[in-house]
Amino acid sequence: MLHFAMFQPLPGFRDFFPERCAKRNHIFRLWTQTARSFNFQQYDIPTLEPLELFTQKSGEEIVGQLFNFTDKGGREVALRPELTPSLARMIGSQANSLKRPVKWFNIAENFRYEKQQKGRLRSHYQLNCDVFGEPGVGADAEVIATAVGCLQVFGLSGADFVVRLSDRNLWLHFLESQGKTGDDAMAVLGVVDKMERLPREAVIEKLEPLFGNKAESFLQQAQSLIAIRSLDELKQFFEGLELATELKQTVDERLGQWSSLLDWLEGLGVTDVLRIDLGIVRGLAYYTGFVFEVFEKGDDGQLTGRALCGGGRYDHLVKKLGYPDMPAVGFGMGDVTLTDLLESKGLLPDFIIAPEIYLVVGGDHERKIALHDAQRLRALGYSVEYPLKNQSFGKQFKLAGQSGARFALIYGEEEVKQHQVKVRDLQTGQEMPIMSVYLVDALGQFFAEGIPAHEPEGADPSKL
RNA sequence: GUGGUAGUAGCUCAGUUGGUUAGAGCACUGGUUUGUGGUACCAGGGGUCGCCGGUUCAAGUCCGGUUUACCACCCCA
Image (cartoon, rainbow, N blue to C red; front, side, top):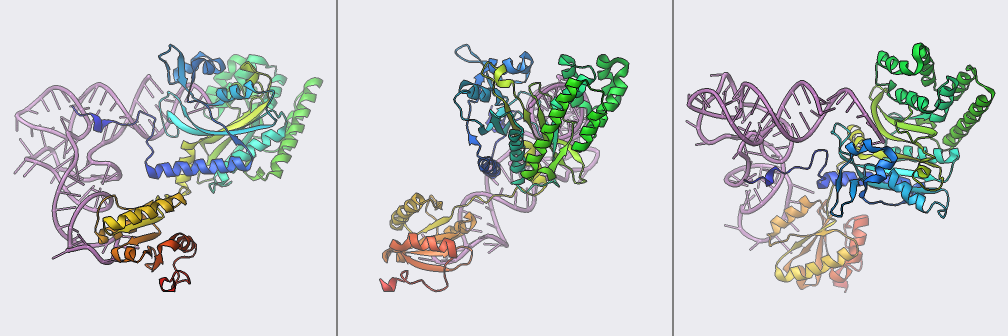
């Protein structure tokens, strides 16, 4: 039985045909360009890692979501589901010698063994930008501005997305004022993270084990905190709480950092896409301070449930993995949801994949000359194409036109005999014979200005 | 992992109450007598109708299972 024709990519994996690959590379190119404009430096990590690297950070539960296996040497290994642990390893291993701040970025494929659905595949590419070694808000601002830049570079604007900025520290301070610390506080944050998606009764149900009969009143307070959209309101909210002196001082300091962060962000010009929104806490346990997520806006201006990007501060992760203390803040942005959004907005053009020059060749003798020129032009960086078998002139012109090339170079018997090449502009139909020795110079000029209506001096064979 | 919907050519789809060798458009290949192109015309290749089983004289069509995709949960980055 022939089953070859039935081969498909594995569930959640994608083939990239040239058109799609061109779009993907366009996204990678603009991400890279933006990250470099902020002077992030590119690094890379292995695709396959020891399983333990991931279980140490996230616990054994994560194994159910990994592509993992035992290799031929008996090692337990896994395809990376994310790059943060590998990155932390790289940073940590040289923590004391890296010049700070360390600003690194990476674009890489990540894998998760999960059932796929819209916007979430088993393999996706992710841009990650991280700043290490700077505990101050300048680093948070840098990361947020980079994330925003990585969306704006595609033509997206505040009409298309919103950065929701939150702060786990402030949440923890608030929870401390409500008598919740440690594991209890983390459990509450876990509920807050899901609050948006759950009906009110379900939220109450989850809060009751923690707050008993005060669950209702806590929820009301939490909701008023989440509804806050300005720093002044935030200050008022905390002034309204009965805080112990020490805690009040901590909160005041934190609000001062908020003020400072917003100043940085204003300077960076990203406040118009920013929204203070304590409804975001990010599920991952390792986040420690400011956190943010970028959400897509629907046509009605309301947020959709689709996050384009998420990030925040994770000051203790490097140390937790056994390396020196190293403050960190970063974000990740996936290609799947971004591609969906850009296509829905018409911001991902079809890329024309074409040669620049197409050779039209007479016979075997002419082909030798033509191929020689093709190699010269390729060495100069031109993309050059020609038929790989004998074809009639008519057919070759057809192919030249279909190829999308700007110019055809015609190597007929007459031209070659006179050491000439006829250059044809495939857009205008304008043609001009050029002496072979001047071909490169002439093409350089033609690509810039087109073929002139009259022959330029020096290109006229009669003057040789 | 749990449900809902769907699967006919590379793509978009048509296919009557089950009834001869399953069609169209686009795409692809060749040609319209080898020096001027994207159009037009002619011809061609390509499908065991997702897969397996069942009902029937007869299944693309009806039934069951399975697989894949999409959507919603669960969970998470």
